Image (cartoon, rainbow, N blue to C red; front, side, top):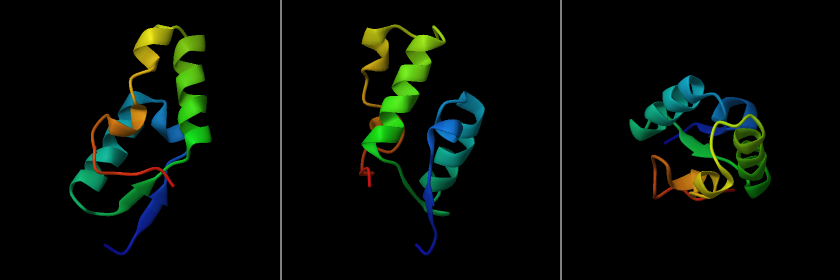
Length: 72
């Protein structure tokens, strides 16, 4: 795999963008990376915008679709 993409909170938060980018990674078009700080920002935004509860937001975002990926 040659390309690596850092997915910031602004692309992980909207469902449609996140889905598109993670599907590309699933098909090995590129590797994706994110940091704990980015995941925390997504978590905070989900709760603040009342998209989910605090408990629901605790589900490990980095394992949504690609369990083998590791944060950078």
